[in-house]
Length: 352
Image 1 (cartoon, rainbow, N blue to C red):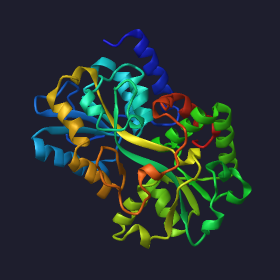
Image 2 (cartoon, rainbow, N blue to C red):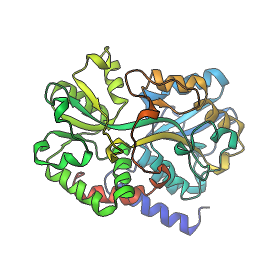
Image 3 (spheres, rainbow, N blue to C red):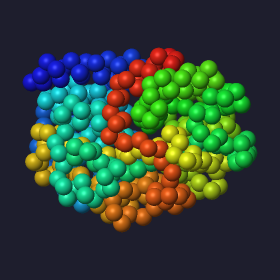
Image 4 (cartoon, rainbow, N blue to C red):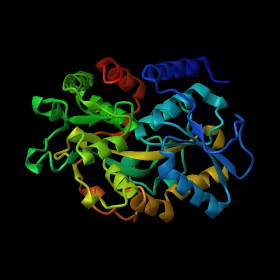
């Protein structure tokens, strides 16, 4: 049974996420609903990664290993809250999250096992937990996507904080319920303090932003000209181009990487943590190692347009190498205060 302290922290986290409509069970990729642990050669993964993006990869894993992946899909913040609420009774073996903040929120409750050193060492230290309880498997940069017909390159902002200026009123697309936006706001809190984050959110709200449900919709609307610019992760441009049967170069939407270590250039990771009860499960370990192996790392570069993070992986086409990005001085381990960030976004009025 979860301890009273764990139940208390679960309630706090879940309540904060519920306040902006983020807590829910999500959907499962099969019809099973047994809350207990699955049989041998089957693992249960809570995936904050979009089903369309990662289901083909999980199917490749099953083909390679014979291990069935029973997947529950929802947002990373939903699943972080659900894991904490479920505690020791969770049926999950692993949490495949969209961002380090959601992984950190669960790790902070001491629910993940430390991963083997040989697994952690496949990834640079900046893309894994200091405690060894989670590891990044792919990286993405925050960017400003802009319509090249509406915004000349010379007029692009030098800092994400410039988007609160009058000239950007009504022109900026944001997805405040998305995990990547929440992680970005957490990075502002970490780098500049809560007061600066609150000021930024208030300025953004006062500037009448274009609210969207997700990054894909922002990129689509920027490309069509419905929105001038938007705050997204870099890889969504490639995803939209793929959906439209074209290449990123052919789109009106272009990517602006904020310079000089600006918080708007945060590089975050999608990653995985293993629940303590599954620490010795060879099938779960095989899943983590697969995500860091050549096939999966190539998939991230070529199919989801993310940056692979394992040593020797290739850079996706059309973007600067990961090592060349001027990233802010933010430790991904410090993005674990998800509940406080969600409360701040709610308070700003960006979410009704």
